[in-house]
Length: 171
Image 1 (cartoon, rainbow, N blue to C red):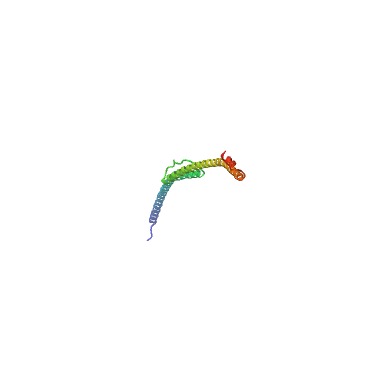
Image 2 (cartoon, rainbow, N blue to C red):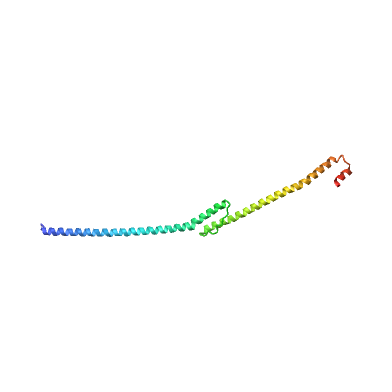
């Protein structure tokens, strides 16, 4: 069962053709795999860009709708704590933020009223103090005269006649 050199050659040629076909098929699969990898990477990059844009949009909304109004409220509260009054009615947005802004505005109104009441109380106290000082002077002066005159009368009471004492009090 020896083979002839022609049949060995033919078998070797078929083997080479088969190896060439396998190699070509392998190259084809490699090219298709590379093409799929490139498409997969393109899809991944596209998905990443879409996710990044979505995150940027969410951050923009978060900043404009929440952080910026809270920053304005914080600055207004700090200003109010220093006694400075500002108007923050322009803040619109979420109900909670609007509620905080309205509360801060009401606090400012109360602070203004308290300042006005304090000024009025100070002016009233000053007027009362001046009035009492003037009235005290107006009352003390005649009272001193009356007390001195009564003291004089008590000292002279025993040494004077009744007619003389009566003349002191009637003139």
